[in-house]
Every structure is written in C-alpha cells, then in structure tokens.
Image 1: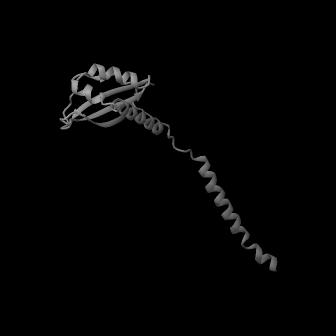
Image 2: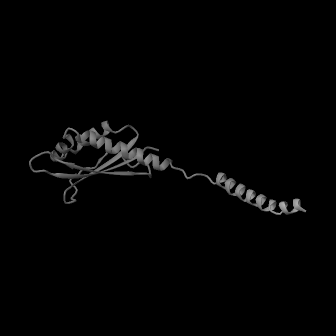
Image 3: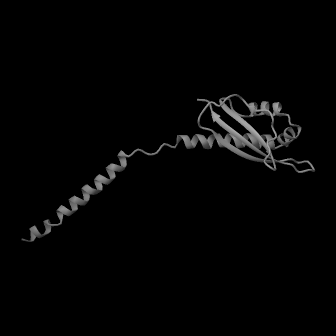
Length: 141
C-alpha cells in the first residue's frame, strides 16, 4: 500500500516537466529580432559625428561657414566621409534661418534608411556666432 501512495505525485511531476519543456522549446522556435538596421544607424551616426568633429577641430568648419564657401565645404566632406556614403548638409544660424543657398550634397538620395546628425558649431571669432548643422547620411544600396 505504501508504494501506491508514493505514485500519486508522479503524474504531477511529469506534467510540470512537460510544461517546462514546452515553454523552453517555444523560446527556441521564436526568432530573435534583427538588430542590423540599428547597428547600421549607429555606425552612420558615428561616422557623421566624427567627420564633423574632425573638420571642427582646427576651426576650419566655422571659417568655411562664415565665408559661405559651400563648394569647398562640399569637397571637404567628400574627402572626409568614406566612399559609398551619401550626405546632405544644411546649415542654420542661431535663430534657425538656413544659411546655405546651395545644396551641399554628393548626389541624390541612395537609400530609404537615412541617419540624421545634428551638430552645434561655434565660431571662434569675437562676434561668437553659433551654427547648427544638420547632416543626413545614408549608405549606397
């Protein structure tokens, strides 16, 4: 008799085991979300902010903006950014007015995934001008 009393809990243990097995197997069947798009966005953002920091490190960026030499700024961005990256730069003054009357870009948009970098540039002249740069970047498909 004593052996039968011990067998009453075995079905509950088997039920719990199969329930746990079902839960863990369902976790393996569900695919993980893809993070490649987010990694690409972070990569483009890093490339863009590094390019702007490199141009602004010696004050040449604010000098080009003050001179309104948009062609030279476009050429420098082409040299600074890696090949295969599309860019479009818009420059605003402290009040939000667009300064560049020429498109500062290296062609038409090449991808639907665009990363936007906003950078604040301060001129080192006595008038202390502030410029807001909006740099849009995309990888060529």
